[in-house]
Length: 136
Image (cartoon, rainbow, N blue to C red; front, top):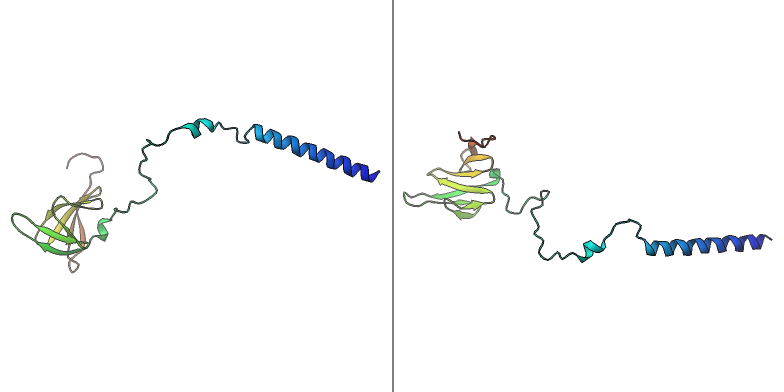
């Protein structure tokens, strides 16, 4: 009799497992309709910037190192981080707005900064950005 109970229990378990697997194939467990997503053409989707990743060209103003200035009345150039730059050039998010005899003036979202040679004071804030977005 004990053998019949074991066979009966095993048979019930097999039927339960077969019926459960058949239901799982018919209906996705998540209940989401992914067919529309799978059929969507993603070839023309424009991806934006990831706000959690710092771009490779993001150079903090504190990391800018001035190693040379060629100053002229008509045209000037400077060497910052081993790059020759002129007014209007950018290093990361920092735009070169002026080249003087002893320093280079850069602008970024945080304001204006003067960069002098290493023997000097380094990076010195000239004017902070106006948080209200207005003029002076």
